[in-house]
Image (cartoon, rainbow, N blue to C red; front, side, top):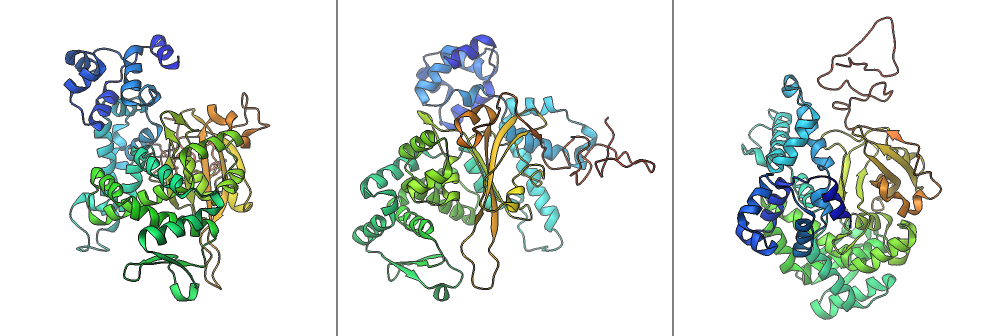
Length: 478
């Protein structure tokens, strides 16, 4: 089997990851050693990289803790390496010239310290940005500079955007509702009325102003704006039903995550409740099965489940059940100015956190063909290849006289999974046409890029008054 073959082909020294797994499970070395049927001293040697992980130990880990051994034996997380490289590109660290192999070693041996360093840098950047403009209005605590949305995004990414307990509850509620996908709204409405005494009202946009959903505790009414389409209205009911019937679980998950402040805790609960709503409308097993049957054709999938394109795409990033995995997708949502408002991933996520998205990625081109799928195979500077597709989506219908806010939604997976996707049919995946992209220009070292917006940190500009290059910012090679 793949795990055994991997262990036989090369020695796996994965002590840091094994130690991190043990701590995430809340186990002592003695307890884990007992469960794996090895001695505590042997486990200690494994965690200190004094012994390699054997195929037998990998299989025991998979069977005992129901994990995917690929998460242990895969290469260093691309997203973590990208984040650390971006931080070290700051002029503050320019003289250190930290090579990429040292970044990889830091993530491999001390992933917790590497993440702490990235968080500290981000907090420092926020403080530096707002100091003076709002002096005295912000906390002196550096952790306070990490926004709630960033913290929640990092937490979801740490869980690979998969919460087994919410999946189980979502499937249970969906089973109890016994509704056909397009009948979810009526079934949920009846459940809210009979089990919780809550009445649902669709209100005129003039009455609810800029609100799209509001729960009136005193009158026990759920008020939904007419601006929401059918999928949005059904999701609003699923969200409210999840809050009622999953409150204890949601509260426990928030407590377990230990967010730094009340605002972050509230946002985390809302985000988890949204996850639960999706798990009700698109129960894991039937959703994944349909995705596999249709080649992850989102138009067919969303039509079957009565959900929106974005709702279905977002759900793709959560298919990480160890016993029934889907294609590990990542997803980004950006506006026309390049601002990222959503960022979720079940697999490797190599894109920039501190800068914008590379303009060579067709995520931006989707704005020129609204509502149409745009595909592309991209390659990162490290040589990693991904199949991606993008399409525009719209926010809630705006008030009269205001422009509709269009966003671009991009999804991708490692190229090795592309043969399972309907969007890749007809492409030569063995010798594909590839677009080379990079992270933010400040750390991207691809030469001769006509869309470069700045020279990379640590490289000197090579401007010649007698020559003009394709790139507006040519830089020295060394």
